[in-house]
Length: 67
Image (cartoon, rainbow, N blue to C red):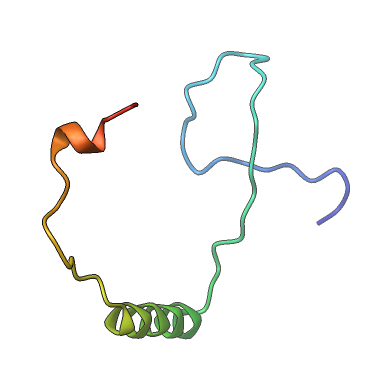
């Protein structure tokens, strides 16, 4: 990218002329294999998790007790 490149939005942004914005730029050209591998790692990690309650869940009052 040259120092004076222009980023062009893919659709109308609905901004006012000269409106200041914050822009975050992230590449979206990920490889499908990378995404599939990451998803497989996530699913395997979830399978190994143990989320079981060992007693009664707290009541609403107990959850919101600010004392």
